[in-house]
Structures are given as C-alpha cells and as structure tokens.
Image 1 (tube, one colour):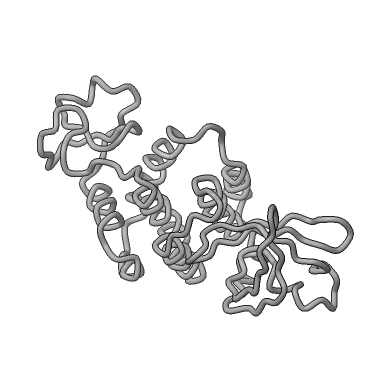
Image 2 (cartoon, rainbow, N blue to C red):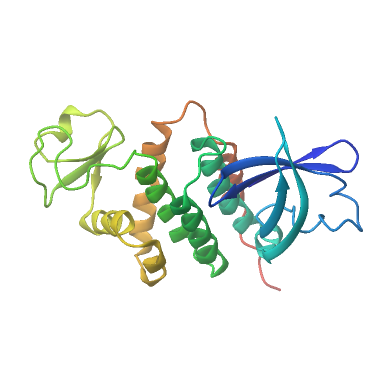
Length: 242
C-alpha cells in the first residue's frame, strides 16, 4: 500500500495481508537493480512475502509476485485511483488488525480497476470499507425519526438517509436519487465477488462520489493527500490526437 525509501538502497513497505492485517516491513537492498526484492516491493504489487517479525519493524526475506498491477504505476489516472484506495485503507485501519473481508475487497477493487472500471471500484471500496469498519450508513429507515423510507430521500453525512420531513433539520443533507440509493444498497449487501456485474449509470456514480466524499470526510481528522492528486489528474485536459 505504501513504499518509503530508507537509506541508499532499502525500502520500508506497508502491506495489507489477509491474516495479519496491515504490517510494516523493511526490504533490505530492495532498490538495487539486481536485488530479488526490487519488483515485489513496488507500489500496488500483489504478492507472497516471507516476513520475519521484529519488535518495531518486520523484515522481508523473500517475495514473489502474484499480480504486478504494473498498469497502475504507468497510467496517471489509474495510479491516482489506486493511491486513493490504498490511502483510505491505510488511514482507517490499525496495524496487525486482520480482516479477510477487507483483503478480499481490496483485491476486488484492484481487479475492477484493471478492467478500466475504477469509477465503480472506488465507490464500491468506499461503501464497503465504511461498512466493515462499523460506519455503515442507515439505508432503510430515516436517520432522524426512524420511519421506513421509500422515495423523496436525502442523505446526511452524519449517518444515512433522511425522509422528506426530517431532511430540512440536517445541515448539508443532499437529495438522494432512487438509482443511487439502489446502488448503495447493492454495494452494501452483495458479495464483493458480484460487483463486476454491476453497470450503474455515470450519473449515479457521480452522485455517489459526492455523497461518499462527505460521508468519509465527516469521519476523518485530516484530508487525504491522494484526493489532491486525483483532482490534479482530472484537471489535465485529454491529449489531442494528431
């Protein structure tokens, strides 16, 4: 998820693993051209790692690549989205708190990204990450009065949907279309392995992006650096063909 240079030839890498959660480890000599750890310790790489435990910092002894995700490092837009996913996971998780669900979610998001579907991958990751961490938004009953909801909804960053009567009481509440509401429910309830069959409209994805940005920001102490990168990449005009 993260790579930091150490000294003249070493790296400190942050990995997310299914059974040990987030861990930090030193890869000695990993920046040398002929070192066997050079490729497996690059950003976004999915691999198998032999790691020896240390008191403050673990050590990577051996590694082999499963999926390199080289495209993410070569394409600015892909890099921006993958960086955002990794920073979200890094920010909201503590070291050595395992979650096989979050590991599967990360692989699902990267697989969708590799198919050129990062617009869906990022939204799916945001929604499901919040749910797995205990921040799932209320989607079936009004956050304020508790009544069942079906239409005319609004969404509050404080915790979920609002009925038309209660929405004016919540500063910053925004309208929630039925299409985006249905997408939210599917991303919250479906097995992550089924996300690839979803084909939401561009409008629903844009609306969900705005909702989840506010929802996540409400739970953060500081802005994510990768958001600035993503906005900068979006601002670059498309290249004109000759």
